[in-house]
Length: 449
Image (cartoon, rainbow, N blue to C red; front, side):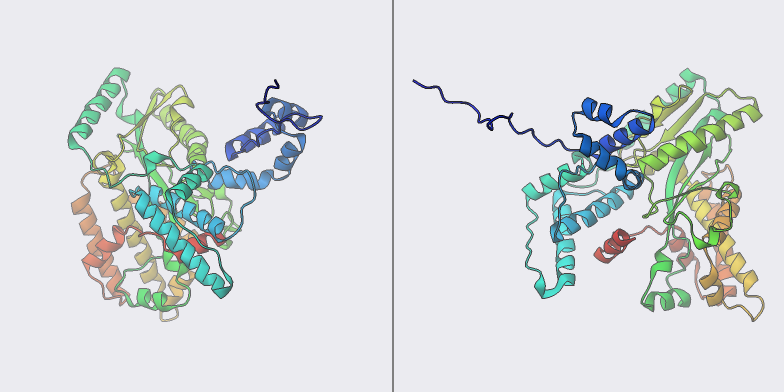
């Protein structure tokens, strides 16, 4: 009686090996190992990959590095080249998802499925009648999308989690204990946070905003930078960390970036990524704070308070023995984040005041109109006004309301000197402006950059 074989083996060979998924993290390991002097043959042997696979990744190392730079923690797994409208839709959906978590917006499965379907229909409409592809935003598709783009379940919930005041108070007590036990002084306690600055946006009611909005290209008013701002309890302010969408904008071509009053970095979406945040932590924060401590005669023993934003790596506490990183509990940023309690609002008010002051000065003669000024206003001017605004922010971050109100009234005076006909509430809206959800057109534009 013959025994059935449990598996079929091709003649003269072994069973076909299952294809190994290669994510960005593994690709970067391969590149780093090779650049450190490791041979291709040794890398292939250690990772159990084909020699040709390693060589192909190394040939494409520049694109891999760009992908890592643009990533906020997603490890998009690539096993085969995917094409078609669904593939294009998923790339745009990943950008949208990334933007939503950058804004700390809650997402449910239904919201994601609806957005995926909306993007697909937009792409199909652009293709015209020739497109016959169909898409169903099923649960099965969603699970596959999560695997391809490493979307974690904790980023998705049925509804927004409300901030728990009792839990917030408990955290404050725990943080106080850490400070007391570690003997941290005010000079050693730091906090930073990101904010998006729409650096060319004008008040909604102003004629110049309405004119620009009516133009075919409305990009200038939507252009933004991401800023990382912070300092310590003693009032020392860190040099701002700025992320722009262009590595070498025309306005900075003749400028050495090392001389700028900000740390200048770039990615195509002007977003904070984990790679950029780690870059800031190692190359900007630690050297700057070491120098500060040396000047003040304070031991270099630092505690850094961060929120749980997706762009903040969770391993920062392991990168330096003298820097302790403490993360705020999730969903409590509005209550506990010190920078959100006044410094950022004050900075944006000062930025507007600086910008309008420059506009008034430039238009004092009849030779330059406000339109001329705004058309020539570039990222170099923006950075100078960021420097001026950040200098204006005092250590009294928690006394923001009265102080910001005074600044806003001054901005109204400057704006009306420019015949913009705005009120305090218009300036308040501009200072507190929060970008809405990216439209499908916005996503297509971002992907094309």
